[in-house]
Length: 113
Image (cartoon, rainbow, N blue to C red; front, top):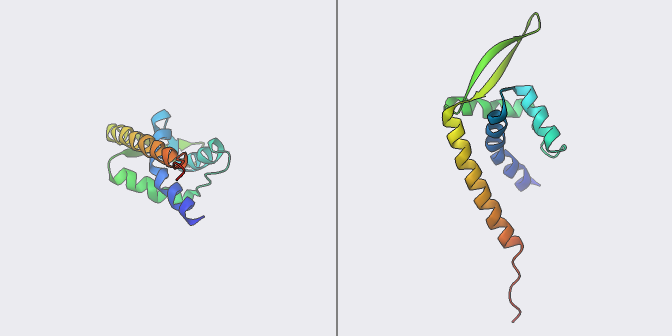
């Protein structure tokens, strides 16, 4: 199961950038969306998601903006920047190439001797 966890962690950047290409999200909303869309398979706690978001901000792929939600609550929304959109294209291409290669290996049947 540890390999599955590492694989999921490596996919977080791809999934977050993809979701942010659709609309701006705040952290908890991203976590819930990932869980809902994956039908519970990808349950990434908000506490684990924020370090990934901070790394994406530091890399210039996303930006953050505070918005008022209600009378007193402030939410931090994340927005995909142009550099993030370019990074997303590269990650999607890499994902598809890797996924295709893995499928080829999993469908491989050696010739009988």
